[in-house]
Image 1 (tube, rainbow, N blue to C red):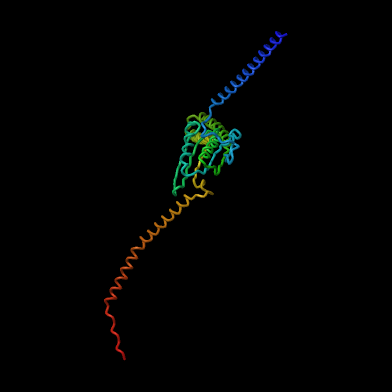
Image 2: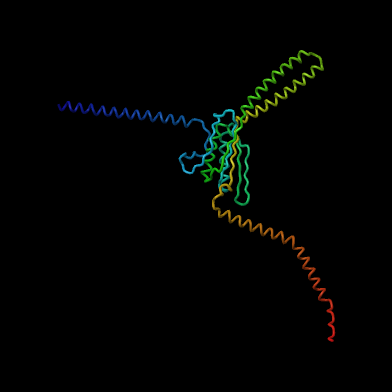
Length: 304
């Protein structure tokens, strides 16, 4: 009996160890699959982000409008963002956005314009204009806003414009086909005319005019296709928008000092204009006074 109980206990212990090892093996295989999936996602080519986008549940998060280009394939969109940022942080954020565009490569992002203007002491206005791959425009706007929020700025307003270029492309394509058909007819007539100069010259002039119309329509169609291939994005930065609604003691003191300087300058200009006239008037008064002193006083009449 004792030998039976010992044998049964050993069997149960070995069975438990086998189950535990199986569970560990299953968890290991699952973990490996998850790691492989994570590695695949990490290797997926994506444009570099400025910073990690804020969580959708984070408080006081401004959002940018989102439009999916595949929802309107014949529409060319344009994005515009106005950010309010402290004056001393605008240059850094602007350079950060420009550097991100450069990292994407010229095939997906190009800088088409950049301005930075400081006026009135601490007032800064700047702008960055980009031409982006349409599929990256939304994500770039979100990352741009995240960088602004990291610099303690905010989104003041944003706008998305759209132009239906697909209709124009299809219309130009039909017109080009019709003109090519007409041109073929005229070329056949030119061949049939032979050497008759007068009739041939008129037909050749018509053919040249048709070729000019075809070239103009092809250029217009190519321009419209370029509008679909790139999305203009404008990022504007303003310190005045950032200071709006906030008590700015430094700005108030700076404005008071500027007004004092301008008042002193205006007083100096006024004195510079009036000083010659005042000197001339004073000189005349002194001359008149000296002449009066030298004139003899009239004798007093004798008393009656």
